[in-house]
Image (cartoon, rainbow, N blue to C red; front, side, top):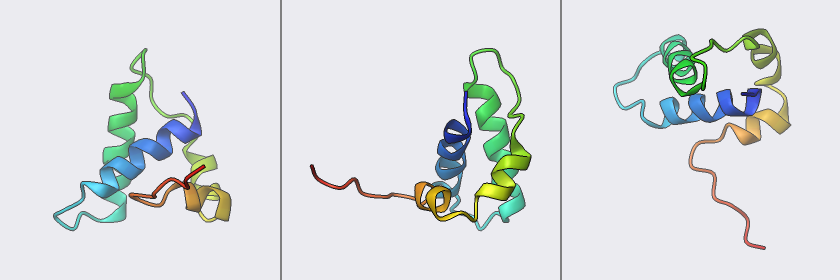
Length: 72
């Protein structure tokens, strides 16, 4: 699994965040979801990369919740 798969988990948790969970809580739930979805139930090992890349436009654009695809 990759960083992109973690971003997908994070976006899902963020989208379902209806009760005002803190960003730390969202991150914790995203890590749990990633582990559940991983074929070998492994933890996400690249959190340090995500913490650095989440502010980079390429990654922050991919983290937008409910992003509509561009028609081709």
